[in-house]
Length: 137
Image (cartoon, rainbow, N blue to C red):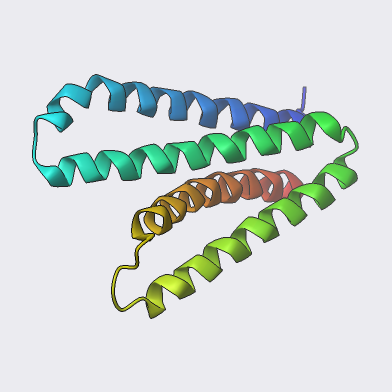
């Protein structure tokens, strides 16, 4: 029995969500070690949290699209719009980062946004690969 593209995307979303939950659980297990460790570990923890928040945000958004649009073509159109918007936002942020010569007053927000978008882009690329692999079959 073959799976529909919707089912394949849904399964990939579940896999990614499980992985994200696992990584967050691992991060929480190591919380005491990080808080008592060097500052760089605490900063890395913040980056990781922002990255996983971005993944969760993308997973929720794509799941909503999948549940809202049962027609494959309609889902794909909305998914591509969603993916393009966040890909553009990510590229714009990377361009800003390249032009940044000194940290600004809102640098922590800038870095958090970067890692959150990076998490979203990871999910977007993974789902895009699932969709393209389904089209090739």
